[in-house]
Length: 338
Ligand code: F6R
Image (cartoon, rainbow, N blue to C red; front, side, top):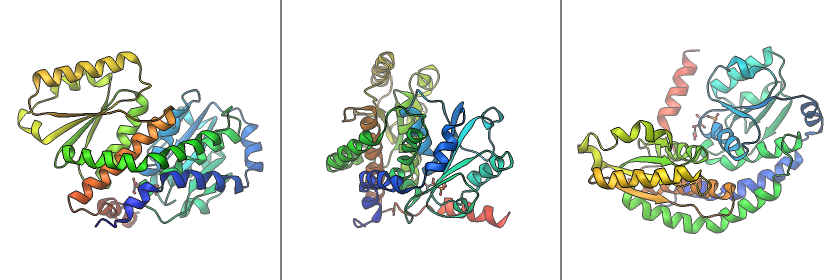
């Protein structure tokens, strides 16, 4: 079980980032970038589901100066249809919701960029295809799925600074950190095993990280997981926390602490901890404070920790992190009923 391929897949994140920088240089982008740069975009619309869609969420929080909207459904809100630079992201290229998004934009003659490894999407009429290496579970291809987006935004003039240097530095930071991050995750397994994780993020950016943790814990460790964000959870969830009392010993609270969070939100987390200590016996708490020097490094360091945690929880429970049988079943049942 220790030889499970998911571990190598998680460790490959930094190499995926570096490989994609090279791959992007080979994409014939001149024609598309001129057409894209000539338009007056009001926003970037990134469409994708699950392990693909998270690349859009990450881009949106890392580049708050650009209006980036992430769409995760069959339909597109009418207010974003016009004047959007449309990027469809689907690792398999066969995701029904994303293909439906394609059909909507095609009918409206909106130029479309696609990031995919294979499938129906790459056979479509696209302004630009960015074909990434295949053969991985989509959630294990985050480096391939995310890296082309900032590179593209720079090429079309939406980003002022070339992100390449930042991405190379990020990859080498993750490579250097991987062993220590994995050891940390193994220590966390002792606290989180057999428990329902409640993950609280102290910023919107780390809310995206919390969501990624949830998806990895769902898909790799095959457990349920709950997430929320401070300050919003201070206005509702804090009241219900700890009830019903019987289940507290079966839960663990994980605080994902973004070093760049707004100071009042950091203070709020401290008060939440006070309340838990005062009112809720038996509820375990863990603070996660990322290493790194930039928001990119903080975010991906914490993502890597969650990936490793989901992997080691699976291995400890004797579960294979690779298959996601219910997702496959659901997709096949939908195909049957087309
Ligand atoms: C599976 C996974 C899923 C998929 C999702 C969309 O590893 O992570 O969340 O990402 O079902 O499929 P793709 O990414 O192929 O568009």
